[in-house]
Length: 122
Image (tube, rainbow, N blue to C red; front, side, top):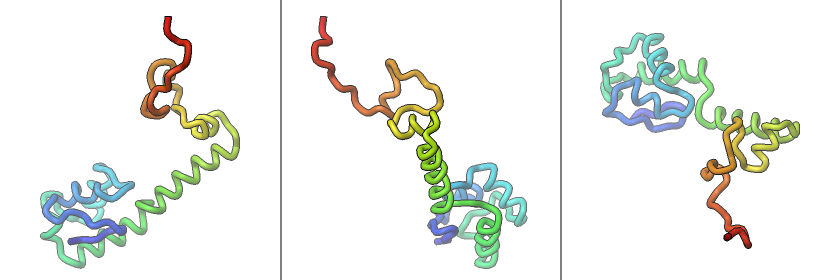
């Protein structure tokens, strides 16, 4: 089993598909990595040699922010907004939708289950 960026990637999948299991690498980034290292995209992970896996690992470490570092960076960005007290930070702090979505009837995922209001029945 190949281990890249602290993630065990599946061995029987094609290389670009398997690379998307790493947080921070999507389909286009995975294709770019394969092209940069001239790895055939039709090959499976278990067909790669140790040197090719090592080359992929080094390329990702040098050129991409992935996994824990990426999560930490995102978390720090949200924390910075909350500390500033800007509108987006306040929405994060109150656990409400941040990007202008309607909240009168929807947003149940973000707001949680509906709470009954006393005296609301007619």
